[in-house]
Length: 136
Image (tube, one colour):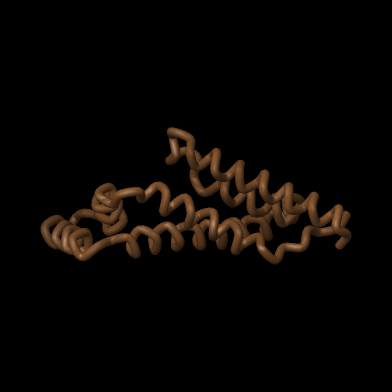
């Protein structure tokens, strides 16, 4: 790949990362969902025009990777105190979903938004690091 094309590709990748950061910083994060993240990864891969079944399978894999990364970032951030709170919440309220309990306890973690933001950007980098866009 020529230097000019490589620079252009890196610039495009930076714009996509900025786009992801912007969407992550929107006030209504729940509606932004994983869909935008998936779209950006697929766009970076140049697979927007792939057949529907390929896009669905790829989207599902990306969403699963994103969910796992977010969950592991939250769990890794728990101190003994938060783990104790989580265990107690689940024991005292067996009707509570584990993810809901984890989300409630996670609110006590300082700078969690920053940790999640970094973790999601790292995942984006990992997913797009070795992509060679399809030539037209």
